[in-house]
Image (cartoon, rainbow, N blue to C red; front, side, top):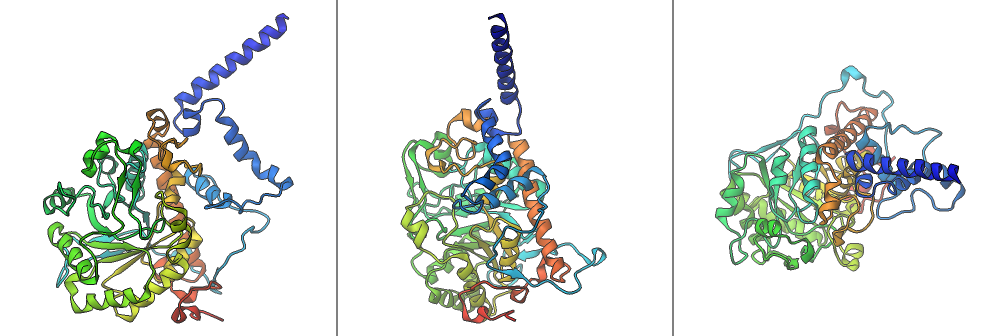
Length: 477
């Protein structure tokens, strides 16, 4: 009996030690929020690779991101090797055409970057922006994400030298405190830049533009998760702070209009872009989801006829993209996937001769180097990711984003869950993930015989149905 009591005391002491250790460490949010029992999650993650050899659920079966994709991001963010053994498990829809004589180390060069905006002529910006990296953080709003998550993203973006977009929820101090370059997104409700009646405010635009970190503005027409429907932020997430940032009532559902009430045609879109650029002096882009191909010809034609209407970039989001809460019918069945949308927009831009005037950004589940490099081949100047960076923060795809009860604190409302996410530690992981993507895209470019990824074009990739006749046969052998 004495032995049993001694064993129980030892076990209790060990569990107590593990509890204290888990609560005090900062590397693992799950362990801080769920001490002791959280180890079962990491045990399953570590040993699951071996146990799955005797099960019927493959690594690529999960949705919307499979285990292979998420594991690649996790390892990259943690600085762990991503080398594979015994061949590939992938069944790719496309392949890169490697060169017979790849680039030697001494021939490699840094990515030269691309300027966004022009300094002279109609539609010029006072401060054009040099994008030094091709992989950056797409818009995720404070409110949809927790304060700790936004701060960690900003810290990581600063470390990696990339930019981050605010999402449609407005500019918060957490975006600024991390030191990152910022793209201020203007959604249909104009959060953060609206007057008392919900209309665009020039005074608020000027106030935002006073921050040197705010490098560009982005007019959001739609995102992949919900083309044709505005953003949704549940009342439980609308705190006093978020209400003040957005300019809305506290504790009420925040539902944006399904489009800008003052943008109903191409001419009004151009005038809106020109107004924001004139007031702020910053480059202005437009984010949208491709649907009607005729719209592109009308829009780019208006850019040629009225250069002051021309956006400095267009940000195309695939129908499979988007982090926001949305009806399943919209998320699953509306909007072209990025594999069709990106070539469509790139071809339209080239047809109107606007490659040097309008930069093209692409998003839509482009979270690994192969997909980022594919997008660059298809004409993207920059690639944006939201969910990839959520995974780098520790997101485990629990699908609790809209509830406010995210166990990793990424989209949580509960202060106890948010406190588990350490912005300093996770900021490092954000930077590591971005750097690993950039590094491996460079490796793909060198394998294709390019000194850097700026030389990618459609001839370097083959095997995917591109959806546009002008691109479908490019590079076919």
